[in-house]
Amino acid sequence: MENRLIQSLNDIGKKAEAFVRIYPKILSILTLIALSTVPMVASNYVLEVLANTWFYVVLCLGLNIVVGFAGLLDLGYAAFFAVGAYTTGILTSHFHVNFWLTIPVAMCCSALAGIVIGGPTLRLRSDYLAIVTLGFGEIVRIAARNLRITGGASGLIGIDRPRLFGLELNQIHHYYLVFLVLAALAILASVRLHRSRLGRAWQYVREDEDAAEAMGINRVAVKLSAYVIGAVFAGIAGCFFAAKMTAISPETFTFSQSILILLGVVLGGMGKIPGVVCGAAVLVLFPEIFRGIGPMRLLVFGVVMLLIMLYRPQGIWPEKRS
Image 1: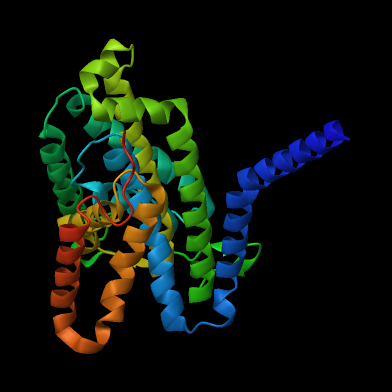
Image 2: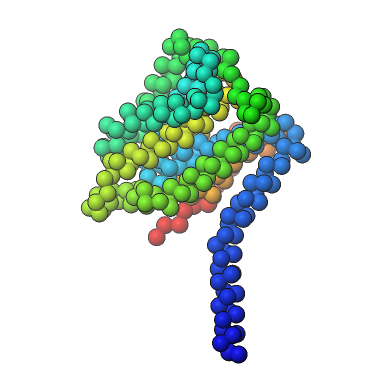
């Protein structure tokens, strides 16, 4: 009798443990299903704001790999976003390439740009990378402004809308769902990378490069991998941004855009994936919440950011570090 009772308690304990293990996955799937039903009840304005939120979630998660996971300060992240957007824009508008075929090309171009910039500079320490990335961002913007193939200062117009199973994606609820799926994939990829061997190597390099090198970690290769993967995230986001807007200009990819994305990462909590998602949401939603007070909304937004940084200097949802 006593053995049966112990066996029953053990079985209950194993089932409870299994439930706790799969509970986050079930909750994530239910949340994704609930969010996918929003277009049925929300207005176009709400869908536009939420689509922008998911878009910035992808960008912030990409930069979080560079800044949060690997500890590299990147001030020119919008340049990779521009590389992806212009690659898709040029291929679809000038060469009439199918949108979906431009995505792998944009990923390769963004990765190549990351290797070209990160390869020589990641061997250096201190803040040299921040200065180089700042210059890279301006070089890309000025090049786009002066090249004929990019449309010059007027920008590139007439970018083809993508088609999916014969349906042209030309409504805001289409892009809400597209960016929602992209954000979910970005979260999944970030979680897998963070828990991987490479993710642990990024953390070691971030905390102490010398100690990591003494453990046999190739610090340059590890940092370069973070830089390139972050660039690929931005390149993919740029592809869908170009398709949604059907027109892009150099002024979309300014230094202030890079700072805005960095602000989302810092505000949410560098290295913490749920925190970065919250930071991206705050970045988009707060100015919209204060839209009713007119031009003063940016001042109020700035004061709110200042208060958050004063009382939560590590971000809204910081990473726990031992």
